[in-house]
Image (cartoon, rainbow over the protein chains, first blue to last red):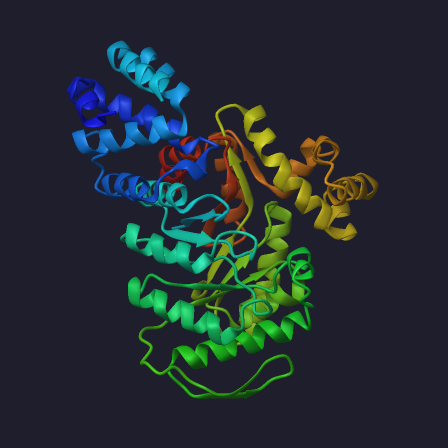
Length: 96
Length: 331
């Protein structure tokens, strides 16, 4: 899945809200062991600079959220009215 | 002005703790304490990662013990950490808990002596000395680093009983008081004062930290529910005189202890009463926590450590402390 392409479709004014929701999904996930350390380090690097809602930050968050909690991520994206992105994620998951 | 510290248990993966540490630093916490138990992830690896991800916070193990980790290794780890975060490192030393020591077959031999001697060895090593030490518990024969250690590292003593508290006052640069209730903290600070006076210091020359189990939520029921597991273990480990001081039925505490021994979590947790939560944690809405912290401050503490579990949702709880509790004490 091309996460960066998906993130490009998120309107700038929505990005903080989306990053906030994805961070919550990741931090409350019980599937810790699924988190790739490279992705975790990228998220921390962006968090350290407080730029998690930028294109790169959101891309890392979305990828991590899908790896750790695919269903919750689809639900969150739908609730955030990002149905197009939610459908693409869902479609990619079905293929897997 | 009181400082706020925060404790994390590295049972969580490093990336969650680092996220929270960055958040806490941004939210006004000044101290980061990482617990040290052999069955969790390693304290110094976690601290080194935290040193890289934070800029201002003072950080250190809260606490490590000299039985499982020999003092020379603690000295080595803490000195190396101080190279990574110069001037931001402190060391918390305690006697350890019996359950953990039992699990690795290590006896808690002469805890007061062990703490005094280990701190003595660590301080000497940190100052670059060659340490030939003939103690009752620890012995070294010319232990010395092959590099030049830099900087001064304050040593805190984690304490609960009167003798350890007095020792902490006597030899520590700080003390971590394992208590939550104002009555217990007041008693503890008085014990610390005895040690401080005996060493010719003043109480305000050391950092006196209350290090309670903490749980905050806008909904009191959620805050209490989160505090229950930690409180059950504290109740089970408390001597009868401490339980009686809080009007807690010793028999009920014994029942919790038995249930925990049998890994019957449901029975253990259901035995925890609101009185137990009140006695052995700082728990409730932000307003309730403010009230309790204000009471603790009257005893003369200079740091309040937000200990685990922190809250049902740690991220939200850190925000609550940063936005509602810390500002109350900064004005």
